[in-house]
Length: 392
Image (cartoon, rainbow, N blue to C red; front, side, top):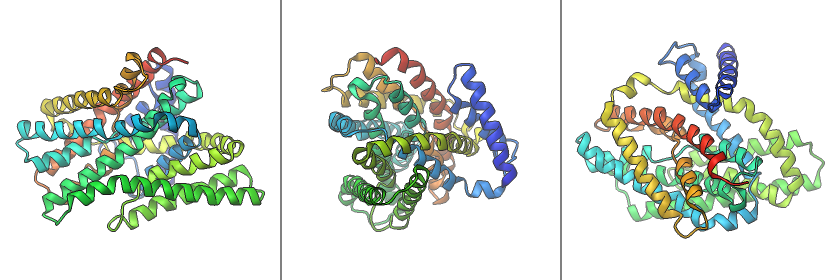
């Protein structure tokens, strides 16, 4: 495992620097390194690190979401509340249902199979989106109209929505007795519970940090450890009650920054340094999950399906922003910011196959293909369009 980590760090750093030098997002280089050295490439990574890959990716994602929470203030949230809520489910719903319908025509799927596929692909990737939005916040691009905060808030809820609808279709396929009304109600409930859990954890730490002298590094470790436990508890009680753990992680950072801004800024600075390492782990290990040969099996029909799905998502973004103050350029940026997919597809793309869903191998192929197409396309589009479409 030690050798694998060394390979990941060295090649990841090199690829990041190389791609940044040629004016491309560094994460694209890191994903390609992962593809190259992963089990479907040169197979240079140990089985131990591949087994731990899911947990390592989750920890890296927690790091960047905590950092995101420490960068959002109450004023931002008040301004983006309703638009963020609309963005969190309207684009995903249109994309998921469009893909479900198209898969019936292109691959002879049933509607349930199509729904399973649609809501795997419909989830956007906070791993790609969040670092980009934080970079824009640091340079104050789009912050006058709170656009980075809008995208940050909506992207994390989008995943909750997509995964819940995916689980509904999986239950319908397996024949399990599912109350769809209860499942749909669980979406806002899981969001509320996640936020409440995060706020409670944040308030506890605020009380501790005010009473006792704790160094910034120790504060980060305490909060990071608690955030990891929160997402672990989420997994353990998932069969009984849903909690949006990753949203709770952001809430921890938000409440600390809101009540203790100086400590929040200091912690954000420390997390930015941790992210240098976490980012390499996250994107290289996401790349290692990508089986290019499997993606190619989906063929031109698969590419067509993904792009039409993105068009449907884009329409959803426009509908979500109708009553906002954003101009045409800013709305176009929001469309680009909703393109990337990676983390959810890598995490649940193989679930239908493992559960015996018919055409599960094709569903996995299409999930992998969506990562290959949208992660680099979205990352490049966000970076290139941000400077042109957003105002300081």
